[in-house]
Image (cartoon, rainbow, N blue to C red; front, side, top):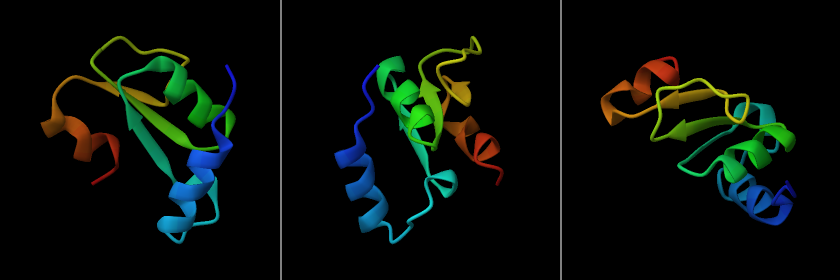
Length: 71
């Protein structure tokens, strides 16, 4: 998997957050959640309840997202 440093760097710049460890990517594609992990970000995979090494967390119900984000 090749990380997407340009898009991640742009997102961090727009969020005014230089530390990738303080960022999280939410996506439904494992290639993207894996790339976020490789780049130092957390990632949450939407569309499955099966834990995977390709993401920091998983979910299928948007109502559960605050729990995953620690709210």
